[in-house]
Length: 146
Image (tube, rainbow, N blue to C red):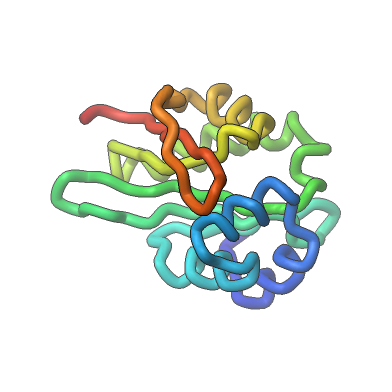
């Protein structure tokens, strides 16, 4: 469903520990990270589980001329309890992102093992070089033609 400001607090208050750590390393609290993502994204959706907002994800276009964008997702533990739904819907949303921005890239914490596994399943490449932000190690993930 399209993301709404009404979803922010409900997701932020129960955000996964790995996502909270990533937000903090980038200088954001969960609620602010979700608000910023919602505001900056050209595409932004909320994943519902049993009618309850459990994750928000979107695409921030970083260079429209070059077709580059930053995909992101922040959520609660509930989303990882529904892997079939994630694997069924994830490719559709990635395809929609690639339609408007054929090059996608962002950072993920090296300790966020479930997210890295999910990104690989969605066809993203995981970089090897580590980047430090506030004592948290990140690697890049990317997909598309450069």
